[in-house]
Length: 329
Image 1 (cartoon, rainbow, N blue to C red):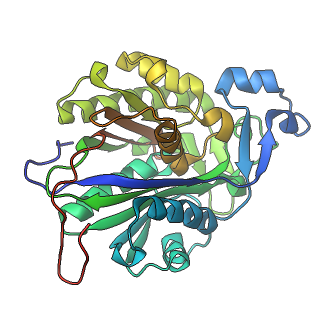
Image 2 (image 1 turned 135 degrees about the horizontal axis):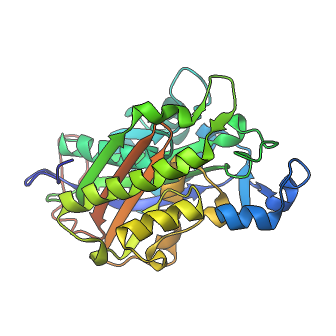
């Protein structure tokens, strides 16, 4: 994929927010449902607990509202809402429309389904909207995977949970944060991880692991190349929170130390589209990212999809942008 074109109008993230349901399912809770134990799950996945309950629209609204409030943006000024999810509340309409109404927005709203790569797909899409003239775009990643997870199946039930993460993007008079990106799909491998309509997630664990490590490393390398930076220049990597072994193996291929990774999967499990923004928000709230730091987002998921983006955090906002009928930022 190309680097962000020279002269294209960019964007910066000015607010973020998260939401997790109150109900927690620990590894110990799962011991009564399947042949497993806490130590086995922790060793193979790095997960200690996951959150269940809530709705995609409800969690998205909570995370989106927090991002809007942090940014200080008037909701009336938001031009688009992009919701990454594989678990919409209804077949029709898009859950983004429900979230739009719940947040009191008057703008375009649509869902993106790229599984666990979804939020990075949505982030790249939002930058495209801004390059074409949008001023402010809300990007949310949410999944309520408990609705499609069989918690008696040791192959999948130990992994998945619910959550939401959001970011508010604002246009800048300049290049903005994003330096390079990559979107990929390996459709011939889609049978490795899927759920039929009305059914539960089915996964070929070994095949997913093999594909995931290769896809994450390949996509990240493409994004770094298009951004014109090397892996050793990164201050932080925000990977999809699938499995600690997959993250470790992928970073090893990229020659990036695990100390640079943002990790929340021990507390959240695999939340699919929500995992990257949840991990990003956690790192930001902990003060792990400073102005000028290079950050890599990298994800993979069913499809098999992959997506990566390289941003330089805290890029100059530049002069206030205005357009007829809109207040400046």
